[in-house]
Image (cartoon, rainbow, N blue to C red):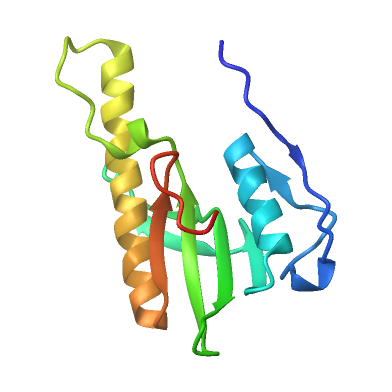
Length: 146
């Protein structure tokens, strides 16, 4: 079984964190790297981890659920204006439709996960647009903030 890199993050600049600085949890090494970047980057004015819940309808059961996005960050642009981003961190493989194969439990689980993620991301993109924000899924293949 895969071991995940998890722990609590203690910010160097706690005033930049919008939330309880004693309860910042990372669920991967990639999330931890981004936390360090957001904490130290002078252009990141404010950031939060798992503090925003966005409602979405699951394609699996048709019910409303809450999606806690990985990060919300406010970045000061070169023009002096702030821009807010909703960021989800995922392995690139989880952003692609699973390749058709035998209908094993693993394949069916991957298809279900992909469908739920697509619903979450559609809801997050719509929420971000309503707020005048941006939404992005970051993977190991591209990371514009690092």
